[in-house]
Length: 101
Image (cartoon, rainbow, N blue to C red; front, side):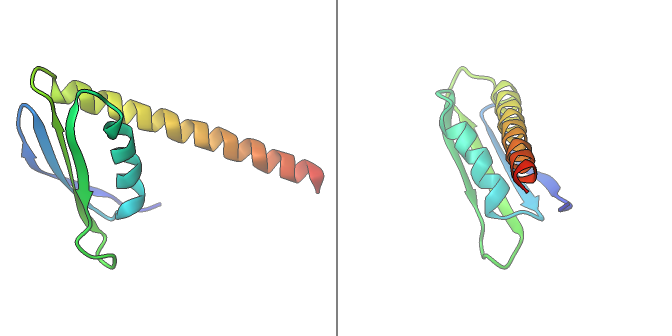
């Protein structure tokens, strides 16, 4: 398992910018994918300065009138659910494969 380090670079009423060390595209792409579908999100994006450096920044900004913390909580829960679904599908496929062998 990868040891992630998270550092808050900026946190305002509407925007959070995080530095994520120990991760590049994989996790942040999935996280961005969750937030991009949320109508409360004005901007979401991440930047990996170089593919060989496992340090990236992630930025999330919500539209006026929305609580950043609520949007973050909802997004993290959605990501957890999606990963849980992926785990279930993987284990079911593994079980089917083992039964065929």
